[in-house]
Image (cartoon, rainbow, N blue to C red):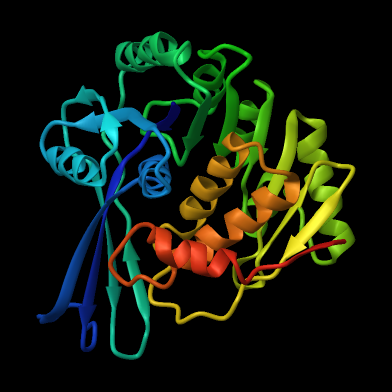
Length: 307
């Protein structure tokens, strides 16, 4: 079983308008809500690859029920630690000039008791896990070392994967992780430096490896991704596809890479699968993940080169 842990779910509401007029009335052309959170998206991607996955994390009483409905529809088993309040709602206004205006919410605070409740639940699941994936931001009232606590709550034999940045990533690394998946901007923010050249990027990855990661899967957006374990470095270029949405692309990459790791894939396999997942996700306009058919189609066309 693969356990995914979502510390801070959110509802992303995408709203299309003709022109966004501040201080005036605006008419909505289309509206779509995504019940999301990085680890929830990862769970959905794993389920679409027929992996046995279980989702947990924090959820909120006032508007969290739809998350359970969506996970049930995707065939994902789940159990959350419930809290008073509302899941944070992020609004993205897109006008006909392709201008994007974002209004991001702040999550309701999570008490120390609720944090301990989730950690104890993760411990109870640990002996049944092959892998654990923790991803995303933290709710109000939580410190970065929660990542370390989550990954330390399962046996050392469990494969540990983290997708986050900054101090949260550095805390996760203290637990020893098989894979981390930052993008280039997240790696720069974590290391507080610019990474311009290939050598800069590999040196940046090396810092993360030296702090406790076995390998780094670095997303380069349209340019694909790099994977390195400090000894071997590989690059996989993405293929050209119609980009209909970037929602969940990085999470789809983690899902596919995790599936490849659990199947005993090589470093090159993990990279190819990750790039295929991320690329397949952007082809769907109204989904937080990919279809298995599109994923397999793209996977078959990708090549990996040592760098």
